[in-house]
Length: 388
Image (cartoon, rainbow, N blue to C red; front, side, top):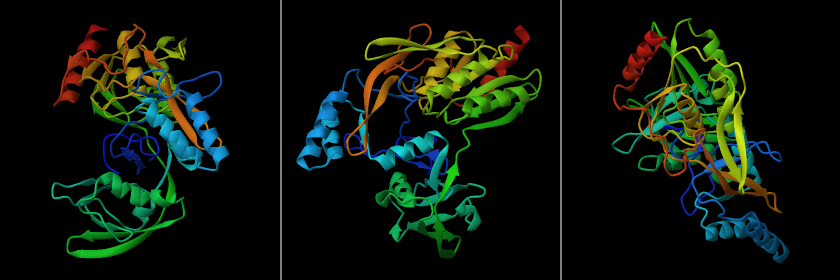
């Protein structure tokens, strides 16, 4: 519901810590993985664990033995991943993994609310998506969310509230219902909503000043690169660009490369390895290399967002402003198990064009800035424009 990141992996617990969830286009907390191209699979994930941990052969063997013994292959695979030391390795049911794929495509199941916890522990609605079930029911920003299907919301972690709203315990699909207890002022009421398949808005654009346009990328979902190109095409002539990657926890690396291509005229974006085999990602030619560019980052900038930041910084295309990024640059690949579940295990790491290893280190901005970062960005853009 509320938080800095728009996406994350499915809810399967990893090493005993429950994952956070996609809801109303924003993420409560946590980390999404990136996706790397590979000759045998269109999407690969990035995480923050040692290469070689959680070997797929061990997990497959554990699942196969469980299948032969009549026990749960998925549970056996989870135990094998846990023993491997692969901190971010995980096993998902077939439905959970499809949910993850849908989120990367910019789709999620929910009712269209975003919310946050107040200091007194109450849960308050902070946003209502236009056209969503929540909007149709007349729920407004500022309403208090008192309960979900009879369970009191006050004092619960926001992630737990999200889980109940989505119906994760029952794998509730679009079309199922959820009953909310709400309050507005002195009025308290119950509202039953029908969950729906909704889409995220990963790219937003607004004018900062006469000479600056801000393009914010919340996550790299399908089509993000094309949206950024369109934003550049329609930005007023002479405007510099502020590319806001703060709180962007990643997404599809193919879309991060497509976004890099919007600002570069070809060339290297990143190198990476899979089981020791070196590979490279390159931008396509024809990007806008003329507009002054500033990229904003913070500790919530992760994975594919760090890959893009590193490319723009190393290639001298952008001035990076903000604080050190998260440092999430290792690669996971999916392994299909006999019962239809999927294990994701770490196999390698990526580096920026200059050879900088991101995993566990992050990217240091060119200029440190906290409060007033947008004003700092506009000042830098003015200087870059004057230097043209």
